[in-house]
Amino acid sequence: MTVIGVGRLIVQRQDYENSIERSYQREIQARVQLAEGTNPAAAQATVRREEANRERLRDSISGDTRDTVILVGAGLIAGLLGALLLFVGQITAMRRPLEALVAAAGRLAGGDRSARVRVGGVSEVATLGKAFNEMAAELELEASERDRLDRMKDEFVLTASHELRSPLTSVQGFAELLMMERDSLTPRQVETVEIILDNCRHLVRLLNDLLDLARSDAGRLQVRPQPTQLAPLVDDVVRMMRAQTEASDQTLIERIDPNLPVVNVEGDRIRQILVNLVTNAHEYSPERASIQVSARVADNAVEISVTDNGPGIPPAQLEHIFERFVRGDAGLTQRVGGTGLGLAISKSLVELHGGTITADSEVGRGSTFTVTLPTAGPAAIDPAPVGTSMIGESGRR
Amino acid sequence: MTTILVADDSETILLLMRTRLELAGYEVDTAADGQEVIDRVDPSSTDGPDLLLLDAMMPRKSGIDALRELRAAGVETPALIISAHQTPDDADAPADLEISAYLTKPIDFDALLDAVAELTAPKAA
Image (cartoon, rainbow over all chains, first blue to last red; front, side):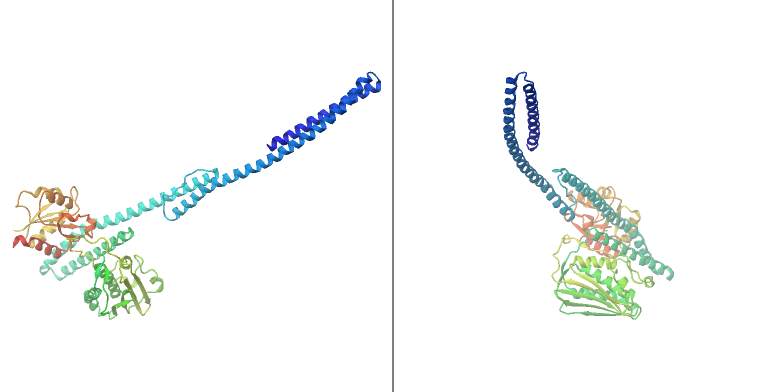
């Protein structure tokens, strides 16, 4: 409207100036005729007509200019209003997709890999949405690839552990058969078979540990908590371990608080953890060392600790002691039969019970491992099928 | 004499089981997979094995599947499942198959012989 107005203003002005000029030309011609006296009356009339004509043109142009200025003004205001409306429209058109984008980004950051936005709206926002979707798709692809590899790894460990058990059953079974006839074997042969059996047990322990870890990684390691008296359980572990510690002239001391409350735990798993801790204390400590197993009541928890006065663990190693395949001083590990997985599994198991496990150590003074189990444990999950007994499990210890 | 039908896809393990069970005084019949187990147990006869000792996982037909079919046909012979997995839930064993006991590989033969003795005792008595 404004442009039209301004254009019209220019055209009107030009028309006006042309008309004025032509009017002057006609008047000049008339005045020449008047001076020459060729047709004085007509020339006189022309001069007066042109003067009147210009007067009319001047009036007309000022009126037209005013109208046009009003028109231009109105056009400007309308233009401003239009721009404002357009602007508000644009803002609204951008705000919705941007809000959707922010929400989707939040979902993506929160782990929802399927988060996408509907592409649309202002072209820049649409481009942004498209870029976001491409990024999210790539992230999803990477994550699903990672999941797939994880599943493959878990599957592999499960299958390997499963497949290795059959030949191991044969090796162990036939070695046991040989041992049933030990009276007809030479001492050297008996020793040989014992070594085979020892290594079978070690392999079983390794397989079970690997399986536990694979399950733990896959989130499938489960505990079946039951109300459990800890005192007899700890006592049982200590009695079981005594043969080994006595063989090394180590002292095994037991300090159990008689007022231990009942805790909701899976007894076999707690036993597994304690056997692991006492075995470590035994294997990493020299002959005649002292090992103490104590159980006491703490704040809404039971604390079981295993302390030895062995060589201790240097701080750099202590930091990583619960990581898999991390083992104590290499100089000692030759006579240590562990798998390097025991503490990693113990940690997973303790945490599945809602508890914590910590290690304190001072080089030259010894180490203490403490398991803290909440007295209000997690509710029982997935209890063992009723009417089915579990026997065997020879490799657990 | 108490007869035990043992099924495992490994000949070596069958030999091992046969040897241990025969040493303990049982009569042993063997099967290489679940289908052979089904073929050897006649639901209409009372002359079948006194105990089934089945590997949970076997090619062609698993011990679990064979037991499911036998139970559906009305066979009530006690069954002992041996699994290479660590725990029963891994072997996907349904609770309704009246599995008398589970054993894991490697087999603890002391535990196995105890379970066998217990499961075959009522018939012997």
